[in-house]
Image (cartoon, rainbow, N blue to C red; front, side):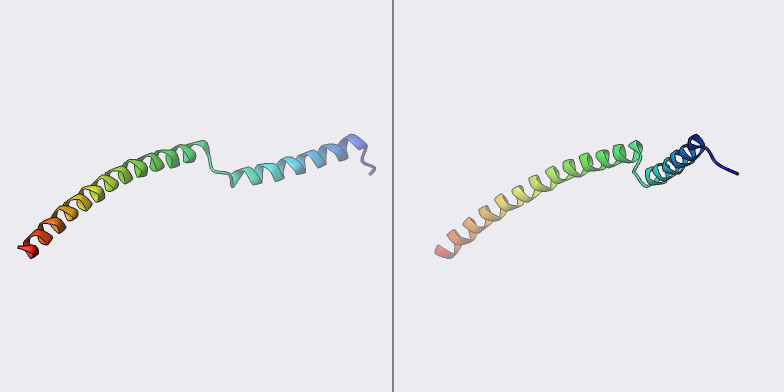
Length: 74
């Protein structure tokens, strides 16, 4: 049976569509991106808290170092 040009073209388009759909299954969904954005926002906020705590600890340490230095000098 001889296939006409339109049938062959249609089969090729179907095969290409299948390949595209298979590839799209691997792409993260919008919901997954939104979840990642939320996770990143939470991590940024957590890092701000950690940074503030480290800075406060450094200030306390510097103050203690000064106190020790004064006591050693006395």
